[in-house]
Length: 278
Image (tube, rainbow, N blue to C red):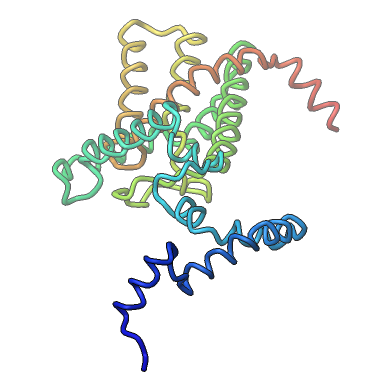
């Protein structure tokens, strides 16, 4: 007849021992085989690397937001832009905003649209073609050697201005303001670009040239300066250029005159150059 569980437990206590359980025996066997497992892991490095890569701790560390993985250098530069880049972008934003606010003659329906014909007349006065034609005519009609020398160098300065402005526009390729209407007089392919303002460079250079090499009365000198300023300012009012285009144009034209003085031609030098070409 089988004995009851209570009888078996009392018999075990009397005998001074305990009945070994199957779970306890399995744990004992695992501890006994653990040194052998560690030896096998040490002898198989590929399996060790695989287990290390599959470790839950590693997976949690690699996917957690607070992991200390280092970012690439270019990402760090994008996250921390330079102060110069921030300043340039801020200047560009202010330039675009101010140019749009000042473009009051950009169209007939603008706030100063009625003054657009006058602004376009001022635009023609600073165009390169009238200046080239006028300098060439004065050179042809001049009787004195001094007058021919001045007109010859003015003509050279105008050609130099067209070349330098055209090259710079082709390199920078800044588009004209969005509110501009392309109805300018006698435009070329590079005139679709905005930086720098050719009218501003020409007005600044020609004003300095005339004030230096022509004997003018005081009121006329004031009118020359006023004309150059109005030509540059009209470019912004018509919406042709941004403010920085005109400001850089004035600066470029002022220093462009220094280059003209360095390359100054006399009639004798010009005749010698023509003779060498023939």
